[in-house]
Length: 235
Image 1: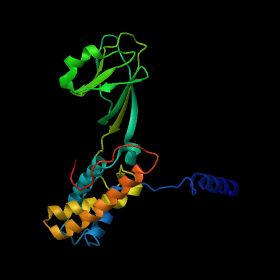
Image 2: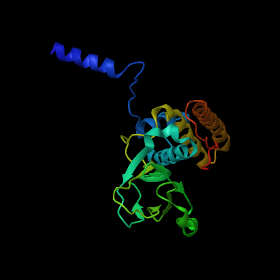
Image 3: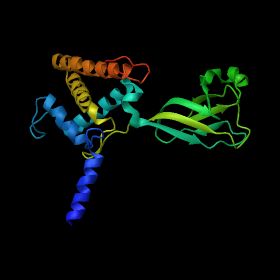
């Protein structure tokens, strides 16, 4: 038994250290508690804000954050899906959980995204060897030229959808380092909805400061990507 305890301790020390920190998953209940503190409430019994109401605004804030922050801030929400192409078939279902397209590669070549309205004008310019192209329409991704061999491959880099949290134990999908930003954003939305403009404006300043700081940190790192406009409104 002593050996087993020692092994567990060693495993914990190996997995959780200064280089590899351990994070407890944040739940909807955790964020709601933070939001209540920002609203100067200590419990959910004597309150004008029901749990269900706060849950709605927390979910809104989570989606707002994902919309406003660089993709690198939510790397856990990025995925690559391999498309099984078929000879003569130009369109394929979008990956499960699809939210936003970031890039497509056909036969190891980066594909050019075109607007659906440009399809007829661009289709003749696409080539598998040099300039494959794609566009999105009606839950499908259209790849052209149309695949002519089963050896052709296609990969889709995309952001997954943020799913609303419905139970207290549901885990937040944004990274734990953004828990404070999420809490401030949700409280700001609650106060705005409650027409408490002064308090809402004060939290908006805090939210914008945190959001700007995150964008600047990523922009100044080795991650090079455009930083979305900051602010409480969806871009």
